[in-house]
Image 1 (cartoon, rainbow, N blue to C red):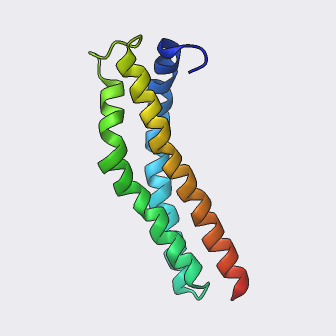
Image 2: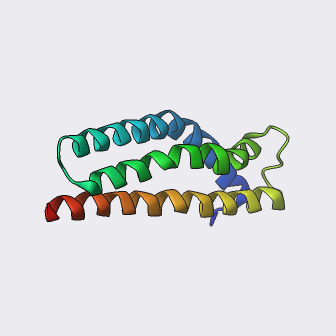
Length: 115
C-alpha cells in the first residue's frame, strides 16, 4: 500500500489468483499428512496442528472470501476509499492465517520432541 491504493489493488488480484490454486490444496494435504503422522504415533501435537491447519480452509471460505470477491469485482474503483479499506481488512484477516501457521508449526514441532 506504500505505492498507493491503485498499485496495491493491481498487484493483489494476480497474486491472489496465483496463490488460490496453491494454498487450499496445500492446507488440505498438510492436514492429511499431520493426521497420518498422528496415527503413526507422532504425538498429540500433530493431531492438534493438523486440525488447526485444516481449520484455515473453512475460515478462508467463510470469513475471507467475501472480501476477496469484492476486491476482484470489476465494479470496484481501484482508487477508492473502499478499496483501501478492503485491502486493510484483507491484511488483518490474512494475518490470522499467518498466526495459525505459526501455531501449527509450534504444535507439531514442540510436541513431537516431547514424545
